[in-house]
Amino acid sequence: MSLRSPLGRARGHGSAKAGVHHWWVQRLTGVALVPLSLWVVFSLAGLADAGHAEVVGWISQPLVTALLLGFVIAAFYHLQLGLQVIIEDYVHTRPLQLIAQVAVRLGAVLFALIAIVSILKISLA
Image 1 (cartoon, one colour):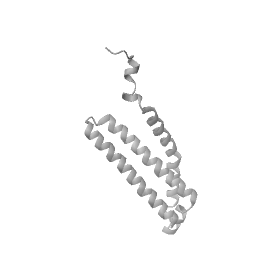
Image 2: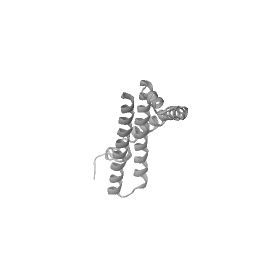
Image 3: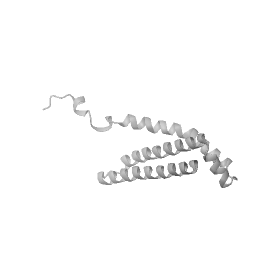
Image 4: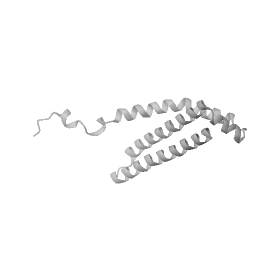
């Protein structure tokens, strides 16, 4: 028999840990991606007939570089958060779940770093 209350026994277990933070960050990145995605789509559509030098000049503008970096960071972080939830919900084998979580996180970081380095290389060239 335990002298702890049901609440005391439940603390630190299950979904009461960091679920709210995860939910808020996923919503915030989603909200940030709406205007950033619209801006990227319309900007790239406007550059459809542009040459290489014109596109490099566009990316080299400080505001454009900052917005592209913000888009890449928000997009890959949002992707990682969403895939994490999908893996938690649909992969029921613990070792496979862990492998999938690590692979998703490493993949998101790797591709985000590639995109960031590419944008910075073009911008600073």
